[in-house]
Length: 110
Length: 114
Image 1 (cartoon, one colour):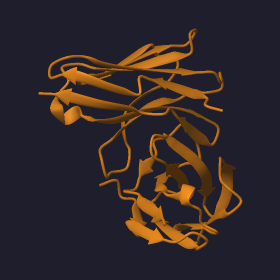
Image 2 (cartoon, rainbow over the protein chains, first blue to last red):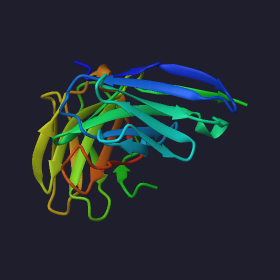
Image 3 (cartoon, rainbow over the protein chains, first blue to last red):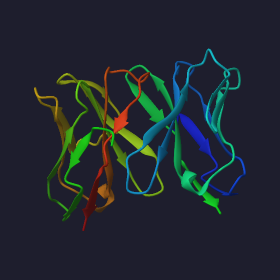
């Protein structure tokens, strides 16, 4: 049972463009929503995270938008750069663990 | 560098065999998580330990087991290996045993079962 659904599975964007990745969840007990970035051959690393009392959080070129009523959250990568090419995972936390989405492979073309 | 170490980096073995993957958490982190990442799949949570005690179980097969030792390092034991067990296995650590804190991931162990 996939509790966190992530889309799209892959994304190609031109340098300077905007990458948008969406996630939806069902469990209303989730109260921590991080995004992880994973480069080939490496472990995932925390990129940015949000808690449900905030609707938006921005860190540099990365923004999380959170819609509690719709149980959805998204990652926006502004001014995408070739160095942003990676796999991005959304996750939702509650209790003892994080539940990860299926991942989105982002390719930024120069 | 996350501060989490995993050994070995690569492991190639045959079906039916048993292997042990090792993880050392970041200094000061008491909680260790194990994940499996298969091709075209996301991160599947396997099991979590906190200060030596099992705290949460995910989709871990009965053929798999884990433990956390007094020095806080953890081992994941995989037995009666099948072709489908080929995957990347990640260990992560965090300060507290909660899904509400950042988890720091190791570089992973790539297991290939032939």
